[in-house]
Each structure stands twice: as C-alpha cells, then as structure tokens.
Length: 108
Image (cartoon, rainbow, N blue to C red; front, side, top):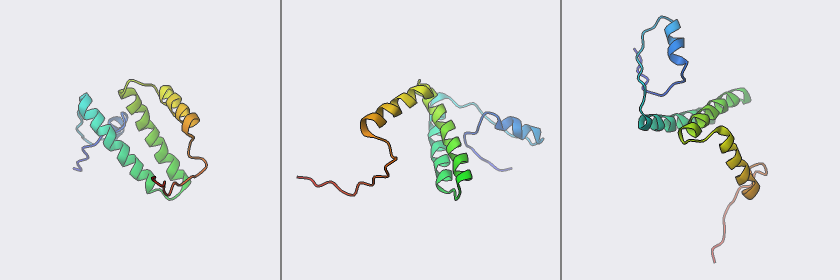
C-alpha cells in the first residue's frame, strides 16, 4: 500500500472510498496543519514550475490559489483582505507586468 503522508483536499477520502480501497487519515492540529500547508505550497509551486503548457499551468495555479485561500484563513484573513493588501502594494510599488529585471544597484 503506498504511503503518502501529505495534506490532501477535503474530498479526497471520499473519492478514494468510492473506489473501494481502504485508507487511513488523521485530522491535523493547528501546528501540524500550518506546517503541512507550507509544504503543500512548495509542492504545488514545483508542479507549476514543471508545467509545459498553459492548460497545465492554469491547473497548478488554481491549486496554488486554493493553498493561498487556506493560508489566509489560517492567519485570520479572508482572500478579500489578501487582495486588498496586494492592491495597496501594487499601487505603492507596482506589479510585475513591465517585466523589469533588476541587475544591480551601485552602493556609494
């Protein structure tokens, strides 16, 4: 039996159950949960980095966004609050649309 030891979406046990396979899960405490969410964010980012087409990239970005929603909730914020912070930062410092790549800054 494969061992996964990773955070999965809430519906995964039900999907596995429909197949008739046996499985085991546990509910994480808050410390375990944030640790596993952080690990999952790296896993999903790596999957995004390995995509080779727009369809797969969008699929992985959706997974990353789901993780961001969960992280926001864990930290006591809604996705709307996160979006407000993002907008304020974009107004103050800009976004990434102009594709600017900083090479160096001369120290005096």
